[in-house]
Length: 236
Image: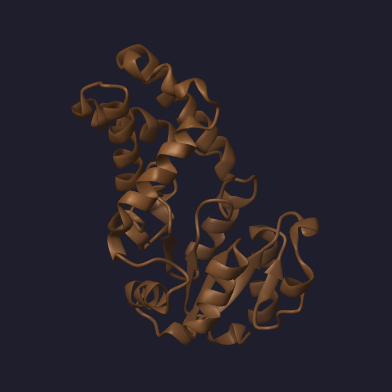
């Protein structure tokens, strides 16, 4: 990777700047509680532990046009659930709002604030996510020049156009963009395939497969503090 050419950085969000699983668990718990109280017809349907996942999978299959918009997909799944429980489907928006509020409650990894502070003073930062998290609701919007999502773009990583859009938003060429993310396929392979550079965040080494370790067109870092060290060394 040609780190001396880096003029901007794009960041994935979930599992890169904060762990995603706790957000999802908290959001779905809030959604379940709301539905059981305000849409009692869904209680029996929700008795199965995987009920929300089942209805989300159904929405994914029934509404392929929504697959890049996770908020719209979640809303559609709630509406389908309400209809199945013979409840008013117009309650879906209220239920989604409860879910979404909790989904935005993130807990940053310990080093993230300091790393974003350092990096944003040196380079323009852009958020590039396939999910529906918001950097402003997460309390880190001040570090970013802008934010792009699969929903706003209509395309998702690893498509090259997503990385090209991030580079354009940052005001640089794709080859001058460093994309930082935790997903080997979506973030690393996608960025490199788009002509950008990549930093792969691997917080748990045991999760790395042999095929992934064989890759050479990226830099692997343990966290964002490590990324700052790598960039400082290269620029030093």
